[in-house]
Length: 115
Image (tube, rainbow, N blue to C red; front, side, top):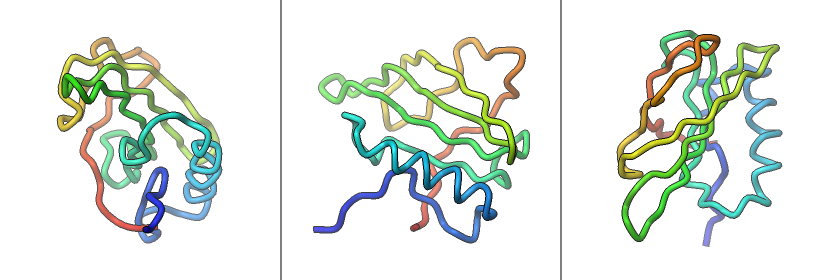
């Protein structure tokens, strides 16, 4: 059986610096006690602010409910992160309940592709 990759992405969607960032993040994610399918990479071309966005949805499968979304914006040299408390099912991409002023808002949609 094939191993499910953490923070899966299509190589054509990311530049060299973005791929390096996501690869390091994925390496560290191996010790996390969550499902790799709950990790998402949004290439900068698919975000409102033009920055790479990575996030993890932590859900409660028994209730089909999202609990927390943890994400980070990467502009090529700086990483900014935020936590979002959600009240939606994991199948729906949550939006920030209270976005921080220093973090631009971002579109949330799961990207398909392969690493």
